[in-house]
Image 1 (cartoon, each protein chain N blue to C red):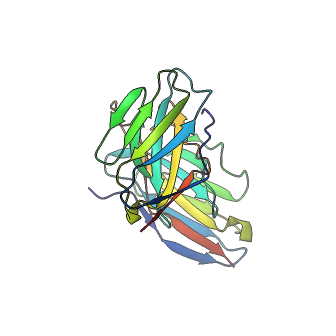
Image 2: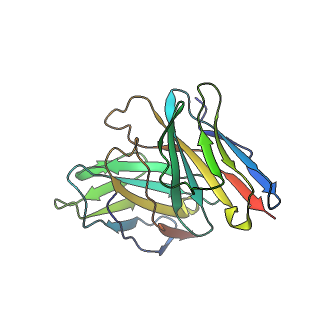
Image 3: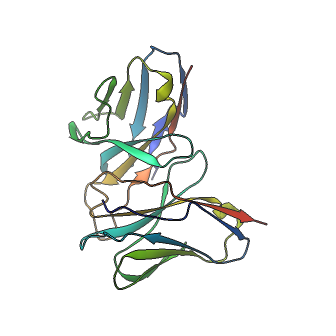
Length: 117
Length: 111
């Protein structure tokens, strides 16, 4: 069973360009979470999605950022008109459809490191 | 989610037992205590989760006193590969909600 997959692992964009980050959750998982991590800091929640639904986007900046999790295909985090401050590691996590007593953890992908030049 | 406080960093040597304590004075009745481990350039990895008393798995033990206002992650006989940042999180239904990560504890294991 493959883990959470993210691509690309590294992404370089010039200021003003668009960045698209992809996340494929673990098989059987229908809940996806996106987090951002700046150097030497903990992860900060951005958005929580289920298939075709945004459940919680309270951590997402109001402008330039959007996320989707279509019925088919990976979840996409999209950053329009990137600025230097968007440089960070972006992690995706997933959790299963049904939670058992021990199933409360989220499984994280390896992250996408975005560098804005 | 309840606020947590843990040491910024700890140093240890190979073969020693390491105990990292996390304070969570405002823990709610339904909250679980979860620990994650993060290596450089990788996503966090779930280590252990508990509600009360003691939980043990193949990686670590988690000790939770009766008042649940703190918890201690215990790593037996650490090796160099245990050098990582360890995060303590407290909350309910953490498979269905945003996780709130603090700055974690940076553990450095020396040879």
